[in-house]
Image (tube, rainbow, N blue to C red; front, side):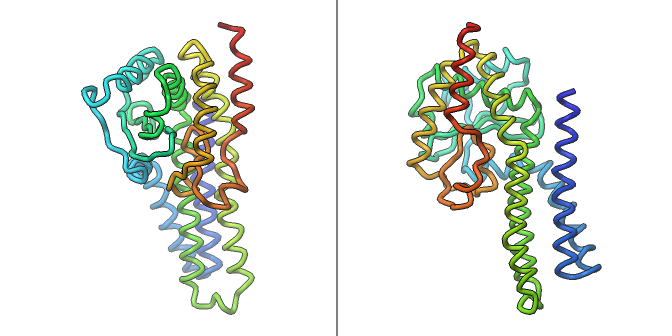
Length: 278
């Protein structure tokens, strides 16, 4: 049932992008604009499905590692993957100083887990296990594709808006249309992410804690990561902020207004409430 619902949400996300593409195309070029928007929207859907993982990893300048390069990290990922019944994902490290992590890929057989150098230096093994379990839970729960597509679609929506505004020769005579495109389209992109991001973070916290067998490591890691990411910027587009385990500091006012993550205090409280089970 959960897998079916995730498929429905993925379809709705792709349909949302296509609908916005068609709407912008009509405002810019009428019926001809709809034709070009249909082509562009279809292309973005294909890119989001097949190449979103490569885009996310490239944005973070992440490098794939072997077991010899970081035996402890690799061993944790391997052990937890086996416990979760998942294929071994590719393991990446980003040179970013901000401590954070994310998983990406269109499914368990095409997945990758990435941690930043800042996270690798900050967390102990117990806390690192909690973070990796959280990310593998995204893979196991099959919501990883949805979050990755949401990030790509949000960026695509902003790009479409930009092209529509500057590609329309009549934009000066249509200031209201330009203003609406500038305000509403990026807002729609953020709402798409908000609609799916918060519930999936709570579920990944819960199932990640169950995978490790102890919620305290993940709870402590969330507290550390939240405090650090309020101070250390992570240069990623706002559209990709929903991928990370905690909200990154991107320097954008949009990210401050629309948080794609539930409050860390609430996440920690839910995890600590699970302690009585162990």
